[in-house]
Amino acid sequence: MNSKYRYLVPNGVTFASLACGVIAILLAVTGNLRPAAMLILVSYVLDLLDGMLARRLRAGSEFGLQLDSLVDMVSLGVAPATVLFAHLRSSGVEMVWVWPLAVLFPFAGAFRLARFNLLPPKTSGGSDSVGLTISTGGATLALAVLAADIFPPIACLPLTLIVCALMVSTIAFPSFFWVFSGRWRSALLLALFGISLLITNFFNAWFLWTNAYLGVSLARAGYKTLRTA
Image 1: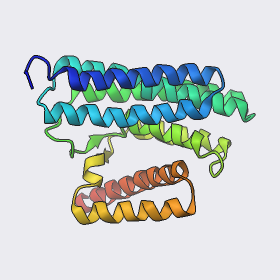
Image 2: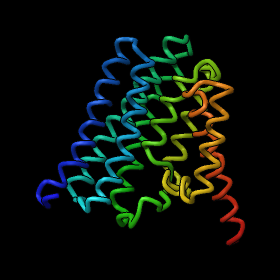
Image 3: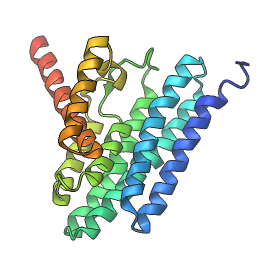
């Protein structure tokens, strides 16, 4: 691909992610919460894809880095907070608790993104991240809304607080690519996910597996801390 135009591919995917985030916000304020949450998940997938394409095409740039952060702030920071706010409000949760958490989540996400932009660039998609990424945090909140039949709305309050704490923490979280590194590990995880789909629906299964990822990451970080103590 012409070196001049290869940058358009990952940046185009990033702009598509932004479109998903803006539409999700508009859907949320009109009460269409499920499609709004689904669009946030599409944005999450696109966020994984644009970084992968930038590395594969050698199209990484300072512009792309800044664009990605700004889009993440909207699509995976503000949009999930808006969807969560509308979800809890419509569920009758006491709003005195909802307002501060709806504001806290974008704050924690902005802190996480600002710190990320000051770190040395990753050399591969398999590198650990310092703190939970805003993309995973935003996807977790969107999945909590979609999994309302197994996850009561009131439980979203402590979940949001935990996710915010993990984003501003310095805990090392493995990347999506590390989780699926290795043929046998990938096959096992996909098989287990397939089994979970026989028990519950797709979004419930995704939500449960995301929480399993958070738990395993915390256990992994605790083990490393104890081993080096």
